[in-house]
Length: 253
Image (cartoon, rainbow, N blue to C red; front, side, top):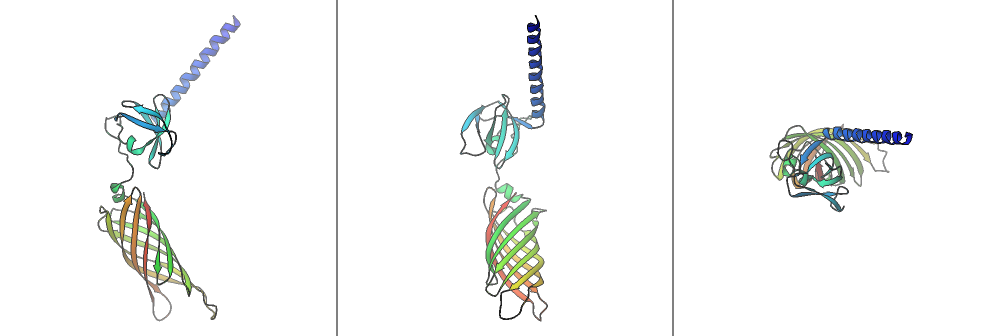
């Protein structure tokens, strides 16, 4: 009799535990976006990437929960509790609760036009010396952005480091080949290499104007080419004028 009572109590506790777990999972799902498969099927992979195997196929009409995003992949959970990764473009074809396609997709030309952030690295010529520039920009409108540039150049007579802030005007943000102009200023530190004469590092203010071209490549990548005329405001009689030409690769977000 005692054993039967224990068995009944054990079954009751197990049932309560399962119901609680199911309720918790349902509550968690309500915190995420849900959609239904509109295409014949969606392939789900074991990890985010086409190199990983497909282990499950969600069929048309099946309800899925969007858990998180990693680059161009979305982690899904089916109503059976199966979790896997699907391409963002496939998930973008699923339907929300109103029967409308989800407004998500991999980066494209529209993403390039409406980007908010970009960052990149460029290399080229800085007054007949080799130079490398890293930069980051924030687009506060489709036509205007603020950029922070860090440049280092290496020459036979001297090396230099430069930090500037530029205002950038992009005239035609929707063009694939999109020209722009810049104006900015900052500081420059020059380190002479001469060992024959006693010299010391110097720090000067700089101002610049420039022009360039952004070219949308694919997904989140673009090519950037630019020219700048830099004026170094020294404490000598004449200011120093430097022409720079650079090309590089940038990513946008």
